Image 1 (cartoon, rainbow, N blue to C red):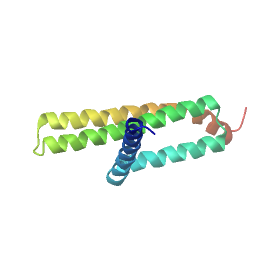
Image 2 (cartoon, rainbow, N blue to C red):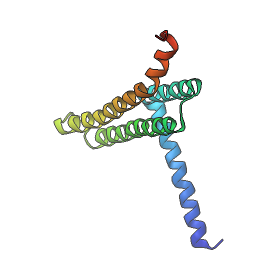
Image 3 (cartoon, rainbow, N blue to C red):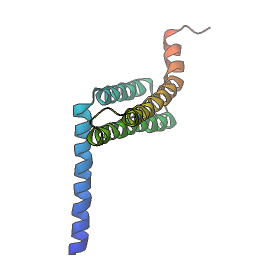
Length: 130
């Protein structure tokens, strides 16, 4: 392998390692991220049990990814705000609140998507026809 290509490959591998470390930081330090990961696991198990369609799997994959991504970005924003503004400041609070709002909005969208997919199936299982 040519040195330049070798360095690029090593750089990409290192970037992937940094991202994996970031996931570790996220899960180790954020109870909400662990809760979202648990919810995602339960959604996947429920989807497998109910035999949802390929399209529904795609929708769930997108909203699960969106929530976890929002949680990661929220955590990153919180860490940077804490670094640059260790003292209380209105703008620091606003930045954190807006980032948290992003997680809430993504979660509400995921909840609506899950309800749209799962509620009809669950109701059909537990309510008699007719």
